[in-house]
Each structure stands twice: as C-alpha cells, then as structure tokens.
Length: 422
Image (cartoon, rainbow, N blue to C red; front, side, top):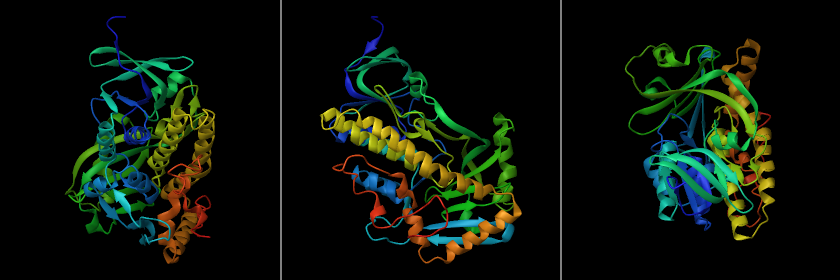
C-alpha cells in the first residue's frame, strides 16, 4: 500500500472537469464545502460542443460571480434565424425584454471558457483540481467513501463524504455505481465542426436552425474573430473514422459552393435520449450528461445539465451543513429526472423532428407554424423564456435559486410547440 498516494479527505469529490463539474464545484465551495475535482484528461478540453447560453443559465453565472468575465470573452446575441431552403424561407426572431427577467440576450461563449473561468474562481476558494487522473473504483462506508484512481504518478486514493459524477454520457461513475442509463440512442450521428467562414454573408444570423431532411444543421457564431459552429447529422452506418473526409461535401450545401473556409476542429458523436434510473445511489450522485443526455437540438443539454448540478450543489451543501436530511437527495433525483423526461426530452425531440422532417405534408405544417411564430408579437419573449422550464423545483424555499423560475409571471408550455404565451 505504500505506493498508493492518499490525499486529505474532502466533503465532495467531483469526477469530471467540464463546465457542469466546475460550476458545481464552485457553487459547493461558495456554500462552504471542501471540494476536489479529478479529470482524466490532462487539461480542460476545447471540443466543439455547447456554445450558446440562455438567460436561465446567465442567472447561474451571475449568481456565481463569473458572468462579467465570460461576457468579456464572448458576445451577446438577440437574433435567432430559422431557414427552410426548400421553401426559400428565412425568419428571424429577436429577443425582447420581459418583466422580471434580468437578461434580454443569449451569451455566445465556448464551454471550455466557462469551465476554465469557473475552475479559476473555485481554486481561489480552495478547490483542488487534479488533471490526468482516471477513476477506476470506489468503496462506500457509513460516513464516507474511498475512490481509487490512476494518476500521473501512479495509484491515488481519495476520501470524501460524497462523490458526484460529472463525467459525461459515458460516465465511469455511473457505470461503477451500477446505475442503468435508461432511454434510447438515436440512429443518426452528429458531427460538430468549428470553422472560420463568414456565414453572415450568406444570410445567416448569429444563431440558426436549418430545416432540411438531408442537410439539417445548427449554425452559430462562436466569437468575434470569424469562428463559427456548424453541426449537422449523418447516417451512423457511415464509418465514423472517415467522417472528416465527408465534411467538404456537406459544407458545399451549407456554404452554397464557397470553399473559402478553414476547419479548425471537428468531432462526431452519438445522440442519446437517456437518463440514469436514479441520480442518487448511496453516496454517489450524478449531474450533467452523466445524469441525463439529450440530443442538442434547441440547446437544452448543457442548460438542463448545469441546472441539475446547481440544484445538487444547493441541496448537498445544505445536507453537509446539517440544514437538510440526506433524503432531500432522493427528491433531487426524482425532480431532475422529471424535468428531463417531461420538459427537456419532448422539446429537444420535437426540435430534432422539425429540423430533419422528410414528410412533405408535415413540412408544410411546420412552415405554417414557423410563419405564425414569426408573426406573433410575443415570439421574442417566448425565445427568452422557453429554457426556464428546465429549472423545475429547486427543492429548498430558502435557496438562492428559489427566485429563478419566472413561471409565476409567465407560463410557457414548450411541450406543445404552439408558440403561445399564456
């Protein structure tokens, strides 16, 4: 045993240093908990994933004290474009101020910047972050647990009262805990690309849906230096290892034959509609994609994953202080699973359907819906508010997040997709 490094015990061990892991760590540290984060990669990864943050997420970033810094890194956007090339249709919905909502914009900033800024703030509060450290087992006891991992210098053992898996859809924490990942995997593969190209010259807004049965896409500007995200679907039966060879063919359609682009990075990934059968098993807890993974159409993946981490940080912090019984963690699990299956999944599934719909009659109906939404004077408010439904019940009336849900002022039903505010 002498060759195994043991670190001082902490209240919480978080596995995964992505944006959810680091924001959860920061929130817990601000609540007075001692926190350690381990990450198997050697650094925060800059992969083509989440890039747009809705007002409900900005609320979290503001409360944690990192919004101003991220605001300086990214840029604000108030316009969302929907394109249906088959019908030569292009609509723009512009966000509008809503009473009781502090933000009338979305923030465009890379998720690696969110993770990095949250990490730097957390480290100032004493959070220990260990990179290059991969979890491979744990043992659970009455009042603590031991987590075994492989680090740069060999085997490592960490002691903590609780462990949170924020390690993605393929979560090792979830697998080691024996928690089933219920749901299904979509037959298509997504390909996310970061590319330098002036999409604005072709009529794209700073954030866009492209509806087409073959060439659906989500296209968004990433920074003010010409970097954009173009994410599209391809048949998962095509060889994943050759996905990059097919990028020029797909770009030809989106970029209308222009070739003056530079691919900066690209990543293929499978689409899931899954959630853990529970988000709490003993002293193991789940957040982010480890807890629930959705297709990204509509941007509800990181939004709901981050809120799961924030709600968990609040209730777990209260448990550690003795303000709440540990049974509140079971309520946390039930509520976040409800939000995923009743709010996130229907909305993301309907967005995906509309983006790739092939039936001509249904495409005409979708076009009618889009036109009605464009003509709706309240559509800007709808765009502002739809993501607030992922907040759900914050569980503790005295939580600093208790004021977050504006549903007492404006109720939105994102499940029926009627575009009505009532």
